[in-house]
Length: 520
Image 1 (cartoon, one colour):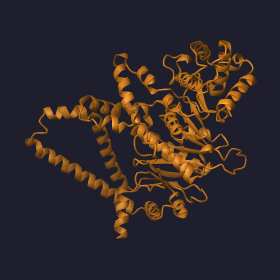
Image 2: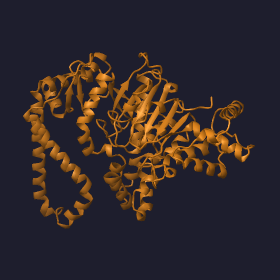
Image 3: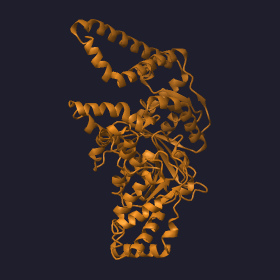
């Protein structure tokens, strides 16, 4: 019975990428070498996957053509059935060959035995370390931490399934679901496409090995409430020599074509914080697709893992996100208001403006409707529900966040203005807003030069908070003159909005990863 089970797991088990000699001592091992039989089976399966991927994107065009050609007529059932039989036979042969090749490969069998043993006792530390000797894909790997459903359900406007498939019978909704799956999601999240994951696979594997060996990274597989598996890497700096802030955890969320192996998570390692990186659904080894609801469930699983298993309290957790990762961090911050602080780097207020800007003007109405119903990444709306400290990093040469090539059009400016108006409504008069926009038009605005006595501004804010409370909105400003409001607005902008003179894809220096300013 054990032999049958092992052979079954050899057929449908995870792909083995490399072997580390000793997980406990982090001695490097070697890249997994599949034998000829396994390679043949894998090649046949890859061809089938490619064919399926092509069919997935072209079926709206091919099906009408096949219908006109009479493929679905009763008379054509015989040839179609023969094609189905041949396809099924090829798949059975491919899986059998792969299983036979793996069954005689000692490295793969060691991995399968470690995997089966861990499934029997997932919490056993020794068995976890035994599996850590192997770098594997996650589809068949056991979940090492399972997220629980939280009482506050995700906002319904972020649910792709709800908006696109519940009304699949309607032609317009059908068209939207096809376009967002075939074009919208790959354009917004190219890191989730099979071709980019395939091309970057060796780089990700090499850097994952480096993070484990050189940075003492601990890889864990998290299960989300919607059945996805999230690939994470934790770097524990608590008690480490020279890591003064090791008891603070940074949860790092990367951009639309970045991974924890090569993205912002690596940049966070320049700091002295503990760091927890994760890959979006569909990125690298993580399963699923980065639609809003799956993004929400993914980062919720990461948060539960950080608090329940790693032992960090919410007030010792700081969120860092780069680019489109700002959506997941903004969602998590409003869902868990006790989180210490948030740093939003090179991100936007709402993805709609960026999407419309990159599409022909004639279909702007359709793009707006498509984004709002299926990919509503509304960072400003979400972060405005969070009252904790926030830093917004605006990059003055950010070609991705600008809509017309000028620094004024950087959507980070709009994100800041939205936060400013919500938190300080009495300061946000039309005249003060115009004053701020004039400052933001400068790639390197000298905010301190316009805020007057900084100590006085901070004292006024602190005094008001002590009298009326530290919650937002702050009602300071009703009795100020226009000049006083401008000086206070410049002071707040200097504290909340940080400026980095770079393009979009340059790693953020560690000096920007400091705890955001707060009234307390």
